[in-house]
Amino acid sequence: MKRIIILATILAIVLLTTLPKTSGTESLINASESQLPNKIPEYEATTDKLLQYFKIHTEMRKIVPYIVKGCKQENIPILLITAIAIQESGWGTSDLAGNKKNYFGISAYDWDPYENASDFSKYTLEEAIIKSIQMIKKDYLTHGWTIDEIGAKYCPTDPKWSEHITSIMNDLQNNT
Image (cartoon, rainbow, N blue to C red):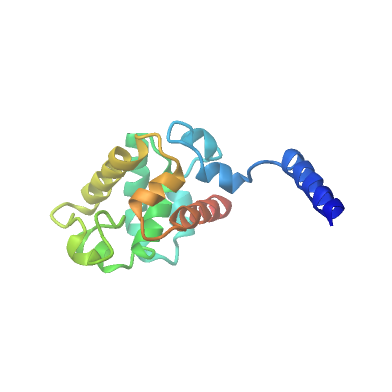
């Protein structure tokens, strides 16, 4: 029995020291804000590419030009912000998106998400999206947090939030 435990321990040590420590997704999830643009593969998300991707998601098509514009203005990853909008607005179909122009679930706390959510309806759609992007940058992307840490603050009730965001980002990158 001792021999099996020793062999299993040696095998585990060999595997842990020879296998890559992270996959592409894990390294992206654990990237700090200062590393984020470098951890996300080089990719130029353009309005045309994203509009093509969203050809059947008409609600998302409305905000794509504003996401691209806002992300370029704020120098933050377009795919990250697009993924957050997809995740938080149900592809642009949520009541928050439709009624409050809140595509990012900003301040939508679980006990009463609609009532608590920030209301951007007094703004044009472009202004609402750009203001949302600025808030996300200020509140989540300038603190050096990893995507996991962003998820823990952005959506504390969903421990898989960062995995969902990363999956959507990968899908966007692979299909646009």
